Structures are given as structure tokens and as C-alpha cells.
Image 1 (cartoon, helix red, strand yellow):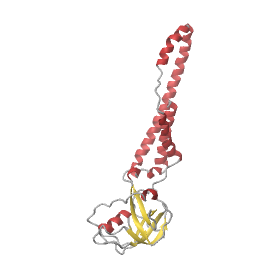
Image 2: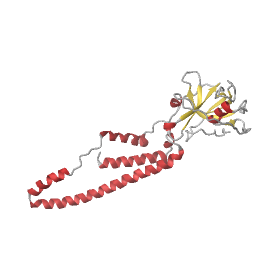
Image 3: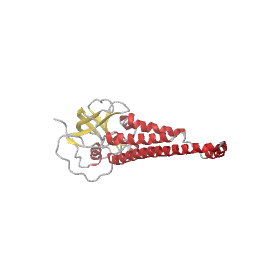
Length: 266
């Protein structure tokens, strides 16, 4: 891979990272919000390195041209000098080559600029087990707000571990995207959560009853009550909701967290 190509790769890589992390929110499809500053810094560094490399290469080219002119005047002493230095110059060439597979580095770089891979969604969530909820012994009293905004994680934890059964009979409001049940006949309200990046993504799902499924990956706000089953406050209780309303909502910018739903518009 020749120097101009290497410089181009550095510059495009820097621009791609800056495009994904500084000028748009594409990076939030792949990493947590807290890693955005590091991506911005990395993009800026790659861009600066590429520009410096291009500038230094141009400087070396100018100097080389001057030496060539001097060498040409020296050739007037006779052809013997040419033959004497030809072998030395040839032996000084660098014949090492970057493997052709290195050209594949352009694919992820160009994808950041022109084609962003799709965000994780229902396809991923339908093919993995739900995230295991952490053990919790103490629960604070729930607010009297109705409907009560909850995260999917908090709802699941309350249903399966809160011995006080505080969610029983309460109107709950949660948001997420639609994941059809791969066994057919139902759907889940879903969130995918990043611990660090897309590679460690986990899903949390709540089964929804009483309302037909919207298309997969549709973001919705669901209001309803806990769907009875098993013993509330134990692992036998399902994380499920009898839906009263299902409303389409706009996909949040930072979709890979389990945030509280926004208050419904009046």
C-alpha cells in the first residue's frame, strides 16, 4: 500500500469517526454515550496524523526533486558513474509490500461515512435470552403517579422479587420496541442495553397481552397492568403486562439504555 493510499486511509478514518461521533449520533448504535469523547479524540488524532503525513511526504518529495537535479548534472562525468551507482540505488529500494487484504480496511472506514450498519433490534433480541435481573432485597415505596412510569428492568425486578407486591393492580407505563415472539402468537416490549458496546449487548423483555403486535422494531409506549401468573414477588411470576393502550413513539436518540418513559403528551 503506497503512501498516498495510507494517508487517504488515515484521513477518511478520522473523518468517519468524527462523522459518527461529533456531527451525528451514529456512534450511539455501537457504544455507550460515555465513550463518545474518546471516539471524537480518536477521529481528530487520525485526521491530524493523516494531514501531517501528507505534509511531510510533500516536503520529502520537494527535497528529492532537488537532489535529482543535482544528480543529473553529475551524470555528465561519464556513463561509468551511472553503472557504478545503479546497483547501489536498486539495492536501496524497499520491496516490502502491505498484504492486499489491508485494502479491506477501507470498507469499515467508508461505511462510517456513507452507509451506517443497521442498529440492533428485534432480530437480535428474538435470538437471545432476556437479561437476568440482579438480586434485590430492599425496594423503595412506589410513587402514587398513575400511570406509573417504569423501566423494563425495574418492572421485571419488582414482579419477581418484591415481596410487598407493590405493582399489583397498578397502572404501569413503559417504552421500548416491538419484538415478535419467534414462537408466534404474541410479542414483547423490548430494550437492548449496552454495558460498553454492541458486543456485550443484552436485552430485557416484557411480554405484552391484549393488544396486537405492531411491526417489528416499532417503538411504542405501553400502558397496562401486570399480567397475573405464578406468585407475584417470586421467580415464578412472569414479566408480563395486560396492555390497555399501545402508542407509537419516536425512537430515542440514545436507544441502548433502559430509561424511564417520557410523560405522555397532552
